[in-house]
Image (cartoon, rainbow, N blue to C red; front, side, top):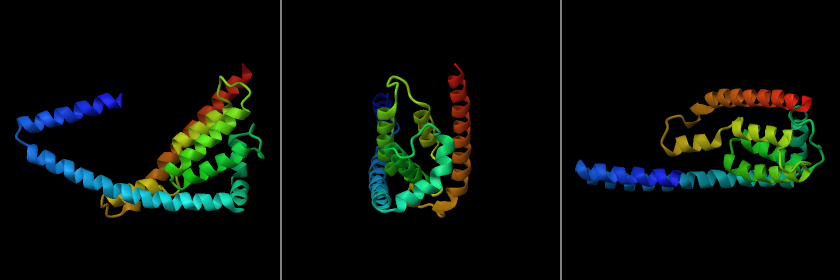
Length: 194
């Protein structure tokens, strides 16, 4: 769908600039947006490399065991059917930590691996398990303690205080996650009764 919408916007912008004699402004905005995009990508690349490296270190050390222990009550409540010794449990724990740190790009591959592992353990391959649904909801809500990506975007765009967004992010992601968790718990109880 977007591959049809964007060309239409580009063509309309070009026609408007042509009709209103605004071609120099259009050219300036194209070149300015290109340089801003490159700057933003370099900022993201640095931040992603740093956090992906930290996540890899966590995976390779005993820190992952400490993180799993710390998350145990939370994981037990959210995923009661999940085997705590499974590969999916570790991948899910890493994904949750990456999301808490605001590392959506680092969390995505971990989340995909976890979903693959959960699908392997799933008895009914045609239907998502309750664990898979809850995990999907948590990833969508993505509670973030440190919204790294948003801070990086604000920083690259010259915000005076890029970290000012932290408290609103906490509020919105906690509310979204709470609503999602409550909904999944209610619907999974109904599913079990049927």
